[in-house]
Length: 565
Image (cartoon, rainbow, N blue to C red; front, side):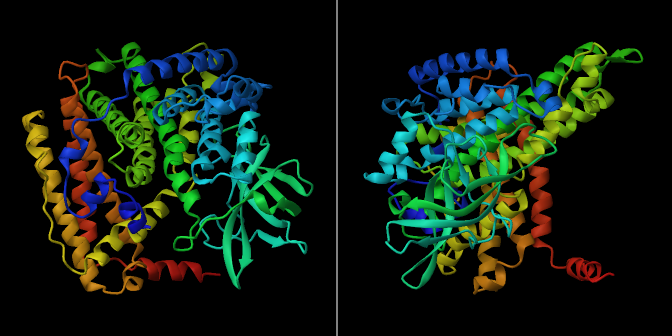
């Protein structure tokens, strides 16, 4: 996978260079901006979506009734909001990747549930696979449903384990060779209860071997059944269900044929990289922004003893750090999406992978701080606050929603572990013990000239720590020449990815701050300084853990616990 993402095109990867020990400041500065014409298009369509959401969607009511308003998806579909990126010629809105991000983020301001349903449709529904489907029957099938504005989803997770490499749903070729019969069960399938068509992963036997293929299945097919609705602690009303396939007949032309890569379905993984930006990053940024607004409103109307709350240093620091972390999430999200639209010479797939955990975990920190700032009023439900006539901020509802952003499409710790195993360390095994890094690029002086003195020091820290991490990875590869002895050390894998994520975020935060006018309020240089200062403390802790030579007996305690009666 690392070779494919880094060498399959003539594009350069900023994070790929960072992983190998080089900070390419020339690639990230100046920070990308949306084209003006595209921005105008996005603003007009976002305003239309917001008008619909203001009229139809109430987050608190959805949370209370645990259901979305009747007819909401019909209206979203009618106005094209379920077909954001689909071609205009086929009844989609034909939006750029960044305008798609903007619309989903706007939806998340009103309802995480609605935003997620839109995001699933546009990223891992049938439209998300168009770029991977060659001309022919299957492409025409997808475009037919696009023209009808069909709602779609992705049926991959199974009860045996969502991250299990084997698919237990089977597809058996019919005797006449014209179709496949699907049998099996899928769980946690988003949009399945409202979908017209699903992308379904299933195991087939081809040339005496097992392989996983993608089947494009209409939900009206005989033998397709929704067997149970999932209820979550948050995301009330979200159409996630368990489904059953009982000899569901799928024409063989509705199978996507592609060569496997390391046992993976390549198109699914590529679609999911950008898909996580829409499904988890956009809601994370939206919720983080809402939190800073709620804290501001709360602090301006509350006091303690003889001072307004806004006068206390501790609260000022909490809010400033939260504002800086929103700035960081915006930097990571904008880079990960705008590069898709603006730069044909750069490949942002690796950044998109780590952006999910960066933003989902940052959003969680902001929510936790907001809950502390607003104290019992923050913990109180919006319904209760509304009943007694005070500002009905749905903070606890957003807290429950946001927890899902760290688990859907892969638990946070698992994604960090897999990224190290599949991307980071294969780079070093490929180098054959020859690191030979140039820690900085020629573009460093330009970005330094546009940073404050404190942020210049953060940039130098970034360069030093990035080389240090590359050396740590190289030493681990030397110590464990066979990856099958290194990769089971999952704590090391997780810590390594977390350090990479921190370093990448610092890079993008400093680049964005250097590209913006210092006259903006709050000052981007100050926001970057606050974020980078906090990140340096986290990096120091991560590095100490990664270099520790002795560890407590976690495995022994676990086994004792597991064997208890």
